[in-house]
Image 1 (tube, rainbow, N blue to C red):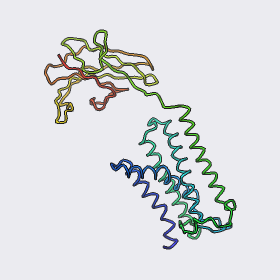
Image 2 (cartoon, one colour; image 1 turned 180 degrees about the horizontal axis):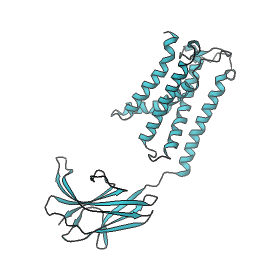
Image 3 (tube, rainbow, N blue to C red; image 1 turned 45 degrees about the vertical axis):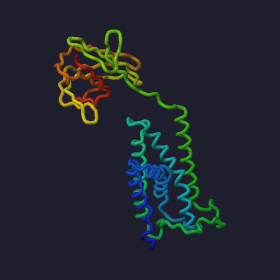
Length: 305
């Protein structure tokens, strides 16, 4: 295979494997998911970084051991990958998305593709003879070359990149250990019946006021909206409740600081019928134009007596 084609192969492989691995992570085959995750955590991001940082073949003043250069890239890819993944995890922690599989996967895939494309552009701008073209001869695995790694101008840059990656990995571990697992953030939501609070299976008697109470454990002050709806329901073939129609009875806003409680009393008159339920839908902030159980942050359901 000519050098004209070889300089494209690893870039194309990184692009294809990254997209394929990102799709496979959400697949149904456990073994494939593990392999795809390993590629995205341990290899592809780091190799893409090396493609972007080092578009040239070896320094012409150094011993032209192209095979050894490939080994350098493969060896550094793991450390660079771990560093890039650690950087993404730290970065998304300070975004509204937080540290989730989707946010980290999206960040890693985006940066991997960006570095690979940057490497492609940088190689394309070089003279054909200067472009790095991957090859992996068997002799590259034999450490018999007397040439010292320190003599190669690439080695210092690699050492710096790998060192920075290790610092990011250690720093991420220290950050996680220092802050520890974040305390679960939630809001308690219940119906007040006399001197008791009921979170489920409550009954609304005819003419009885509907009092709801919430307790904010979100870590900061929150604005809530409670929407009371009368719903006509039926039981689906799978036993799940299906809403066939609804009418909004009342809407109120509530505010509570972290650790504080708030309550609201509604005077509602739902229609009667065995298939009627009253649902209280709690939203953080404003509700959508069509409130539903699926979009609500918390849901309370009451049978109508």
